[in-house]
Length: 187
Image (cartoon, rainbow, N blue to C red; front, top):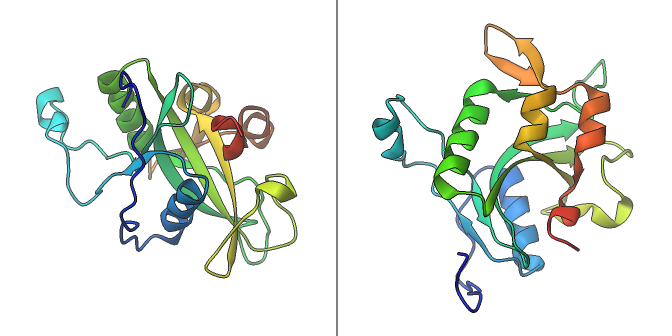
């Protein structure tokens, strides 16, 4: 995507997405006229075979806003707050495999592509992890998109479940390193 003297804006219809978090994120990118590529997650990359790994999870989007940095985006859909009886805010868990895969993609794409986890929070109450102007309305739902650079997430992540090999950032660190997706786009 870099190196071209102009940017290409795709006008085709959005990809059919069954994951409402990813569909909402894609709609936001289109509304903001941000160049991106939605990755077909049903197909696995041959890169995994070259690295000796059994599987390499695909990124969800390649996003190329104006400026020197493009993003490798892995969407993490969560509710804000989560839980029916004990409301939990700022849930930000991920699998270690997701983090390793995102890091591997970043190695292949190079320094012009920053790996980012985007937590797509479906807002289920009156609170939001993003400012009111950054709340995105899509298909009768509200979303707050919070991005965290992979290096920051990896550094602060703590084991959540050894059984499921999941990690999570402590709330304080997540609030420190996470930012509304709008800031990643320079808006």
